[in-house]
Image (cartoon, rainbow, N blue to C red; front, side, top):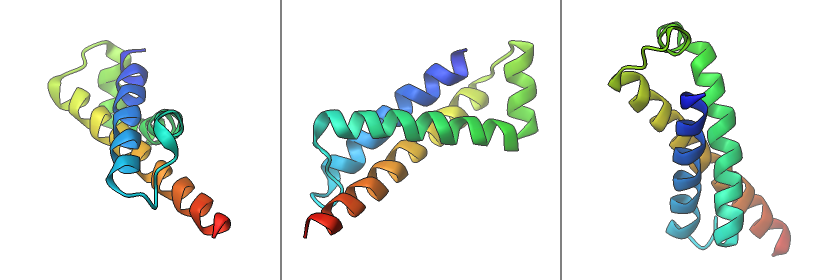
Length: 95
């Protein structure tokens, strides 16, 4: 459960950062946060499945600092990437 919360929080921050960094990607504050939450949750879960050591630590309940950092990076990147993609598509179709 902790890893999901880390992914979501980092994703929200990543989405907010990506949206505010460029007007091309900006979906508004709420849109940036929601797309970041979704992106962080999805990519964070995919990263967990692809990295067996992180999955083993999460299942045993022994989340180390490297596990937390891995989830935070994956969630933040996922949130930023999804926000950038949705923002670019939204602004391209609006033009």
